[in-house]
Structure formats: structure tokens, C-alpha cells
Image 1 (cartoon, one colour):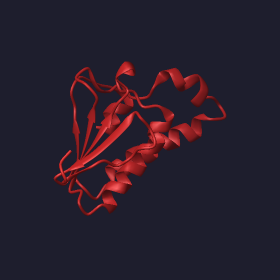
Image 2 (cartoon, helix red, strand yellow):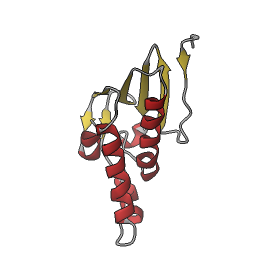
Image 3 (tube, one colour):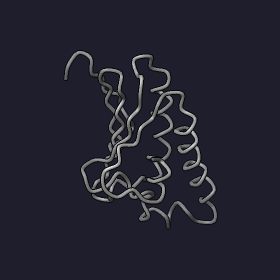
Amino acid sequence: MSASTTVTASLLPHLRVETHLGIQRITISNPARLNAFTAAMWLELPKLIRYAETDDAVRVIILEGDGDRAFSAGADISEFEQNRTVGTSKAYNDSNNIAFDTLAQSAKPTIAMISGFCLGGGLEVA
């Protein structure tokens, strides 16, 4: 890693962040599930975008999927039984909407590098 590269720690292993020469690259890394977003990833993504907005070294944000099979298949449906029940669906939907709104309102240019499948919430992220 060169001196001009910084790695921002994500609280989650499924979101990798690296900044190099003014470009912050956020990699959606859940390839076994076609880079589907877990509930925790929906909560973490806005934090990473906000961090990039406060970092003067970051000039552009790039989101990409890990590997070439998928940018993102959207939400991880294996969590729906737990996260989209009558008592939890509002909080889950709110976390999705906050992630989408944070991306849409980012003051820095944001690019989705789509390779492979891009479905559902992954399409909304893009």
C-alpha cells in the first residue's frame, strides 16, 4: 500500500473501504450471496458515505461489488423472516431508505461500478 492509500475501517467485513488518490472505493463484499446487503450493511453504508464527505482527501466515491458475478442482488432475503416481520419491518425499511437518501444527497460525486447482477436494493444503490 502506497503512502497515498488509506484504509477506512468498516465495522463490517462485508463492506471494505479504501481511499487512494482522492477516490474512496466502497466494496460490497458478500459474494456468496451475490453481494446482497444484510441489515447491518444497510446501517453501515450511510456512515461510510458521511465519513467520506468529511474527508477532504476524498474527491469521489465509487461503489462496487466484490468479484464479477454481481454488483449487488439487493437485500439478503435470508434475513427477511427476522427483519421484515410486523414488529421489525418499519425499522428495516427505514434503514434502507436512509442508505438510499444518504447516497442520493451526497455532496461528492458517487459512481456505481456495475459488473454482473444488479437487482432490487442493489439497483436502488446504483
